[in-house]
Length: 234
Image (tube, rainbow, N blue to C red; front, side):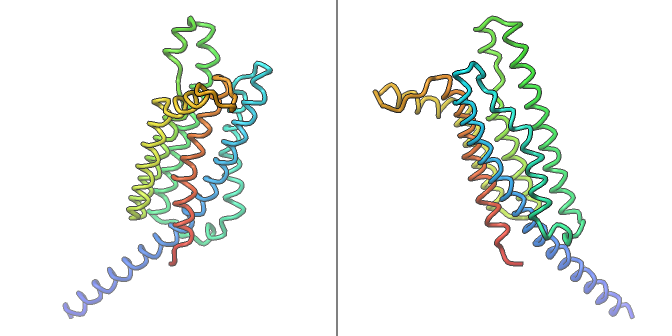
C-alpha cells in the first residue's frame, strides 16, 4: 500500500513537472512574439524620432521628436493584443506572472525616468547657467537600454534560456557604453572633421545618436531574440 502511494506521488510529481515545462514553452513563444513586436515598434519609432528632430531643428524645436516615445507603450500594447493569438490560450502561471511583472516594473521605471528627465530638461536651462546645465544634463538613452537589458536578462532566467540572458547582458552593456561615453558622437564628428561631404551639425548629431543607440538595442536585444523564441518548436 505504501509502495503504491510512493509511486502515485512520483507520478504526480512527474506530471506536474511536465506541465510546468510545457507552460514555460508556451509562455516562451508568447514572450518571443511580444519581444518581436516591441523590437519592430521601437526601431520604427527611433527612425521617426531622428527624422523629426533633424527636420524641426532648423525651426528651433530641438528634440521635439522625442515626445513620440510617450505613444510607444500604447502602440506596442495595441499591436500585441491584435497579433498575439496564443495569449488567450497561455496559462496563467507563475512563469507568465513573473515575466509580466518584470516588464511592468520596467515600464514604471522607464516611463518615470523619461518624465523626470523631460521635466528637468525644461526647468534646468531656466535655473542654471549653460555650463551647469551641461554638467547636470540627464542622459535618458543609456539608462533606458541598461534597465531594458536587465529586464531581458531576468526574462531569460525565468524561461531558462541562457542565450536570452546573454543577449540581454551584451545588448544592455554595449549600448549603455556606446551612448554614455559618446562613442557614436566621436565617430561621427571624426568622420565630419575629415572633410567628408556628409554634413550634419553637432546639434543634429546630438539629437539623432540616442535614436541610433535605441535602434541597435531594439535589433539585438528585442527583435532577434523575439524571432528565435517565437520560432522555437514546442
